[in-house]
Length: 271
Image 1 (cartoon, rainbow, N blue to C red):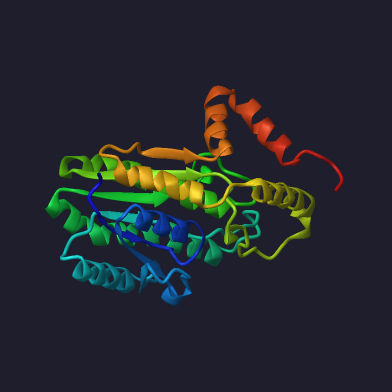
Image 2: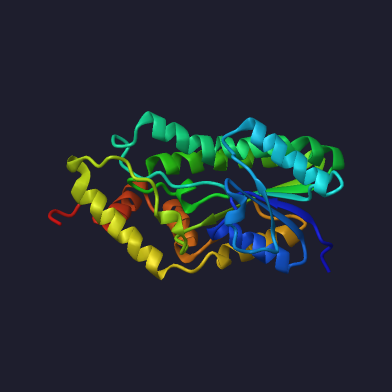
């Protein structure tokens, strides 16, 4: 039987983060969630701390409070806080792109840096993150989100090398489409020049979302990672998250690009 672990889950107010927190609570762990508005989590069983991952001070205070509540120990940090900034590269402003990275990448980095001294000293722990299929296979009209998740992939793989001598595990979960409010994303100011392709892409993504599994499938993978002594670095969940990276590896680059464009109707004329 797995011993109860002290686990901090960021972005746990709703969606995938809330599902992760609930599942780990069910597994018997001592789970603390975070959110910008901690009271937004509907589960009264999960203690919530206030956290703004875009603030150095907030990240440090959150981790300090967690450690105070758990006798100075943290067994796992699960970085889930993030959002989707959609829009063509030309449509998304530099300020919007910077905000995307401030949450998705630098927010994760702040939390990692806040827990590393403790995990190194105790010579144990797990640092995990919700990455994305978009961190492996970029999608059109999600350019800044893709880039932020590619950055997360690079950071976490590097961290895995650096933490191995200290007995700290590093892992990611890379979901495809999951039914959450994630797709209700801030959109850039639309330019009519991109309209036909953008509209076909969003329509296709909406269809994926409607057929997608719930966030519990992602939570199950995190549950397995927490139980594992040696979790894999990359853990795909959903059919497309498994299939598309394999096809990208298997097919010539031109063939794979054509398949992506066909799938989203990017070369089609008309509406």
